Length: 408
Image (cartoon, rainbow, N blue to C red; front, side, top):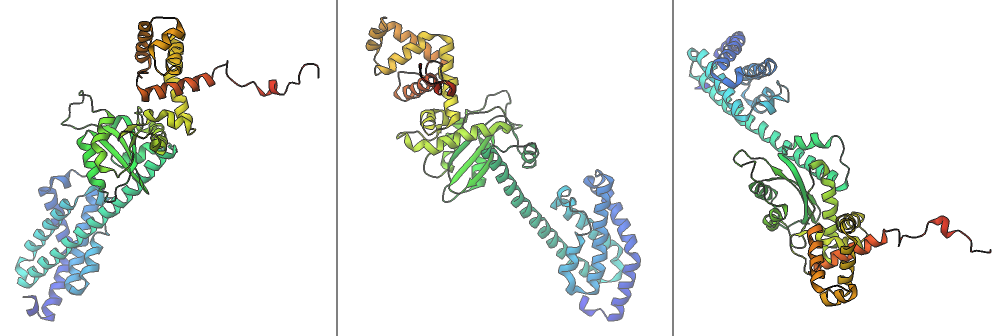
C-alpha cells in the first residue's frame, strides 16, 4: 500500500518519474494515434493542444504524487494547458478516452515499480475524471446562459425592429434550423413556465422556435424547420394550426399570431402586427384563442396602428377598387343597409341575385365574406379608411386653406 512506502523510496520514485515523463508523453501520443480515430482526424493544431493536455496530466500526477493534498488545484491545472476552444471541439466522452489511454500507458510503464505507485495512478485518474466532468459541466452551464442571453437579444431585436447585419450570425450561433416562412406568436407567460417542453413541442410540429420572456408577455418566433425524417416536399402545418397546438404552453389570456413573412430577417413585420393585436385583443369580446392578428385589423386601426390601416387599404379597398367600382359600390350599400340583400337591391336598382353575385365576387377578390358579422366589420373599416385616402375626401392642402376669401 502507499502508506507502507518509505520517504527514501518515494524520493527515488519521484526522481525516476521525472526522468521518464518525456517518454511517457511520447508513448501516450503514439497510443492516441493508434487507438482513437477522432484524434488522428484532428488538425495539427488541435492534436498539439490535446498533447499539451496529456503532458500536463503526466506532470500534474508527478506533482500530486509528491503532495497528494494538492489534488483540486493540480487536477484543474491540466485543462488550463489547452486553448479554451478545445472544450468546444473535444467532447467529454473523448476527454475521458484521453484520460483512459494516458492511464493505461502510465500503468504499463510503472508496472514494475510496486503496488503503491499503481494505486496512486488509479486514485489520481479518478480525481482527474471528476475534474473533467466539472469543467465540462461549468462550460455547458456558461454556454446555456450565453445562449439564453443571445436568444433574448435576438427576440428583442425582432420585436423592436432593430435587426442589423449581425442578426443572421447571431441566429446561426443559436443553432436556428428554420427556413422559409416565419411567424411571431404573442401571449402571456404561464406561472410554471417550461421553456424546454415548449421548444420540444414546437420541433415535433416541424418548426424551430426562438423564445423570449418579457415580464408577463411570452413571445415565440416560429420558423419552419428541416428534419431528415420529414418529407421536405410535404407542406407544413399552417401557422395558425401550429399555434393551436402550442396554446397550452402559454398562460391565460389572449394569444395572437402575426402574419407569415418570407424569412426570419423580416420577422419584425409579423412581430409588430402580433404585438399590436395583443394590445387590443380584449376589445373583441369573443376573440378565439389563438387569433390571427389580421382578424383584429379594425381594432388595431382604431387604436392608431398604421400597419393595420395600410393592410386594410391594400388588402381590401384597393383590390376591390381596381377590380370594379361596382363591387365597391355594392359593398358600401350592403353594409350601410344592415347587410340586407333586398334593401341593397332597391338602392342600386338591381335584382337581389345581382347583389349576391357581386358579394361572391368580393369574396373571390379579397378572401373576406361580407355576409358574416365579424368580416363585415373588417370590410367596413377598410372602406372607410380607403375613402379617407381618396382625392374626393382628402383634406385641402395647407396652401388652399390659407388662401383669403374672394374680395378681401
